[in-house]
Image 1 (spheres, helix red, strand yellow):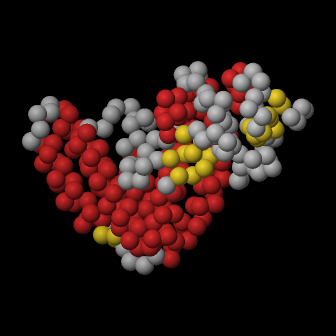
Image 2: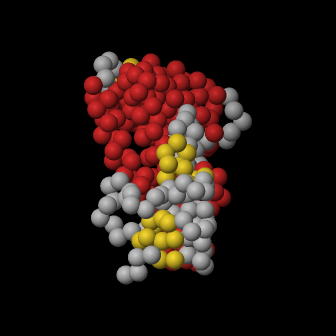
Image 3: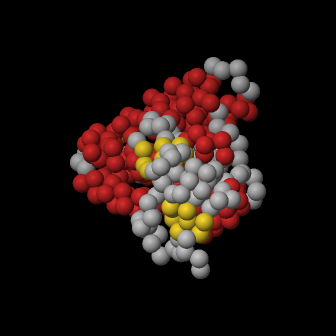
Length: 260
């Protein structure tokens, strides 16, 4: 699943991701609310947790590491109870749980890494919950669900990259090729889309000649004072003001077409 994100600079990409999320999340809510049936969380989680606890118990890890791994597996069950106290999750509840499980494996935000076996358990739970939800909302709903999940991952990663750039810990994305497609692989748990300069170059892929056309504004962000520019290749773009100085530094031939 790919979402075209064609704004130069991290701020612009984040704004467009937010706009797409606003649009698609409402559609997904409708599909989830109209779905019939429930997901039995005990059927999904009990055998899975037992399997991975046995794997950890038989491993050569220290008692301390094993204890923490058991605790993290128990958190998986507790999280399920918080989202669906009855144990029977509606499509909306199961999908929210799926997202929470994915977020929990986001090691970029964890103080200590999750044990590999625990991460595998969470990934498996994520996949089973995703399959259960998608089976309830049909093919179109499943595709929509995947797009929303990928966009949420992109949003989180772009926000993190913005924070790193402000702190001087990560360079800005290359503006000499100011277009991108946010892409993440379906089936991964909340895959990080853009977490630094190297990953940005890999997963926010440049596509020369397909930049955001002038005259279109990022959805949900029309009130922002975007600037109209022309890069040295004679192509015109809209750019977020906070990205302008970096764009000028990277492309000395850049021209501002709407001098304020």
